[in-house]
Image 1: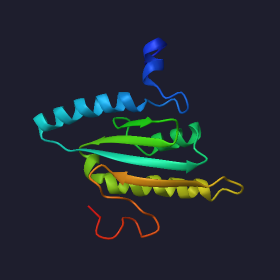
Image 2 (image 1 turned 30 degrees about the horizontal axis):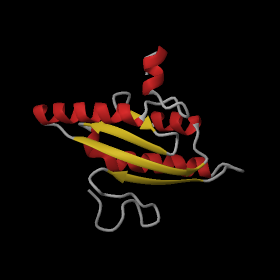
Image 3 (image 1 turned 30 degrees about the vertical axis):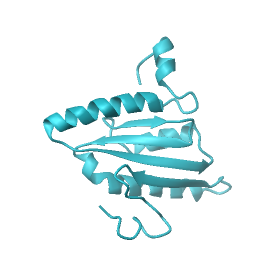
Image 4 (image 1 turned 120 degrees about the vertical axis):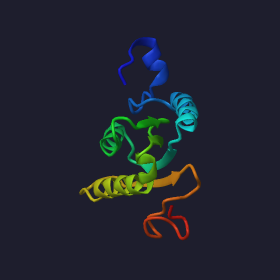
Amino acid sequence: MGISGFLGQALTDPATGLPNLPYFEFIQDWESRRASRRSYTVRVLTLRVRGAADRSLAWRLCQELRTSDLIASDGGRSYRVLLTSPDAENAPAIGERIQAMIDKLNARPGAEPIRAELALESGRTFDGSQGLWGPGTHP
């Protein structure tokens, strides 16, 4: 993140080292206003996690995203990703990559399972038990 001292502590989730949700919401609001002026898309991908969530999961999530995308955390149990154009239109594919990464982590011998629910802010929900995107919800 590059911010140190008290400001860095105020904007960072101590459990994961990622930006926290209040900071995310500030940037999301700013980016949404900018997108409306410049006519591009902003999407938010939400990931709720139950199970073995830790800094290594946060690091792996960062590896699945562009450096220009913003990922934030709420104690390692909830993550939000701000995607701007052109990745905003690829949100389903990014969700699939994240789910594949979690499946790979769960396949490790002796790994505590990570259960995750992915959703797009637009209300389209990822549900691995029903195929990639639930019935009638594919963008």
